Image (cartoon, rainbow, N blue to C red; front, side):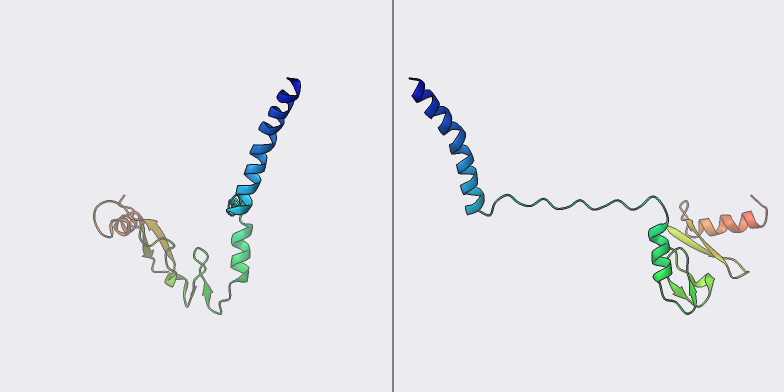
Length: 117
């Protein structure tokens, strides 16, 4: 009776492993897990590398790395949610679109520049 128990235990241990081996190799095996993408660094090293590698013989916009003739020609990084406001001195700024009216952010900046708000 002990021999039957040993054989049964042996078969219960060996058969599942053999079946798994057989099916894995016959039907393509387990799928390889894809490597998870790395998070962006917590410092500015990546951006600095991109900035230094960018070629521009005019003005390189610091926020978008676009090459333009003048700083006030720089595009906003997220034009769908930002308004571009150009100042008279040749500079510009991108600000979040605000409120309900078109150009409201620009209007508020102008009012602030005039000291009215």
